[in-house]
Amino acid sequence: PVAGGVDFVDLLEGYKANNNQLQTPNMGTAAYSATVNDYKFLFMNETNLNKFKASSTDYIPKYGCFCAWARSGFDTHCPNPPNKYGCFAPLCQKINNGYAIINNEIYCFLESVPRQNFMDNGTQAITSSDANWKVVTSQLNKDENNCFNTNDFNQQQPACSQ
View 1 (cartoon, rainbow, N blue to C red):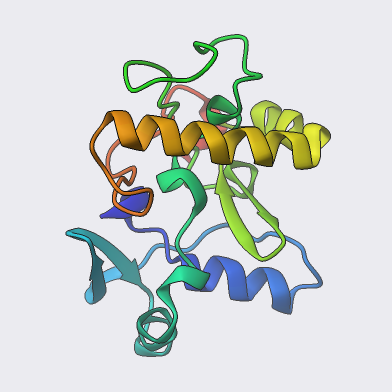
View 2 (cartoon, helix red, strand yellow):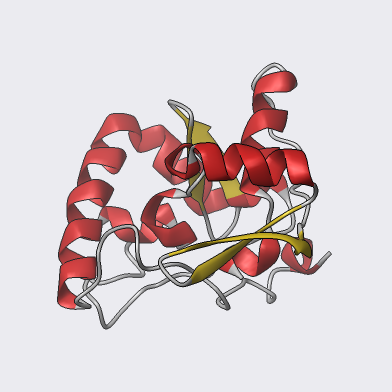
């Protein structure tokens, strides 16, 4: 499943309900799943599943839930511009440092440092990442919403393997 089964409805709705504070992500189960372009998304309950089905684009993470900082072109560890051969940085899926909500859109990150770098670069990072994601998905012969992180998770960082 995308992001190993993170319930993105719960992530976004929890953020809104908790005064724009990210909580630890909750994982969904196979009992509540939806498929988008052959990629499976998991949810904790039927309510979240139905919200996703009603408006999946509200909950689908940007850049397929690969590290947004790596997509920006500003990450010195990645090729600039990013291409289909490099830097699909893994996701720190189990803690809130692996995510950011900006303008009600979900962004995913390797860990807290790339997340902070992305936030510090604001609109410029988003604009650059948007443009680079279009190029990368085109190189992969994929639609922008048909390329998702299903198995690339940051297990090296101790905080990410909790």
